[in-house]
Image 1 (tube, helix red, strand yellow):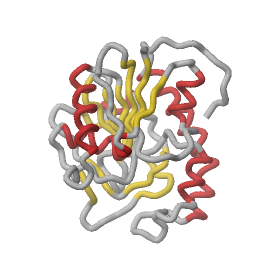
Image 2: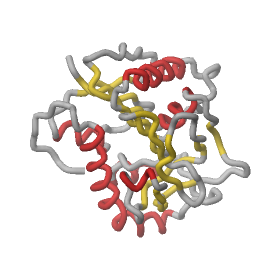
Image 3: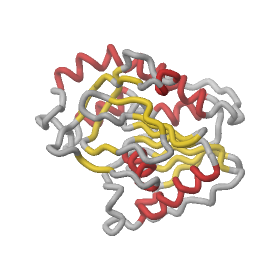
Length: 240
């Protein structure tokens, strides 16, 4: 069966914008969680595309988390096959890692936790507007590997987006997360409040209603572009 493969690292409700987009367009998808021991399939003609989500695992610690080898294999195979792929946060670092680039925290450590402006490069202007603020939740970043093109950066983290092939993209930020998802994060015991660079809860609550709708509209447009050749069967679902 033809479908889009979603690679996830947690058990949160699947209310993110990728899932909503796939449901809205009637695109079949299948979810895999390798951290639970689930094996990803082969990359063949039945794989219409893939999204590798963020998570809490350090991509360079395969010795601690052997399932990361499975994800490395998956990303490498998708890159080789030129399968449409979007890698987000941890997923973005996986893409950089398998292409030979470094990943990890800055020195000294700094966090992006809240809504931050990203600035496109010359190449990135084809994808990003000049005034986009996006949701961030990280303190690790990635270097740009040989053969990839940097698309955007932020004040704290110079590498926020890259293109690694005709259909391969990596985003450090979380444009896929809807308001309900971010509210869950804000209430999580891991929330990065008080860390260097992090926004306060009050600042986030003020920025969310201003920037989340713009970010969401931009991201849905990006998915239209990424999955332009995926067969669609329009359905009535809630927009996100």
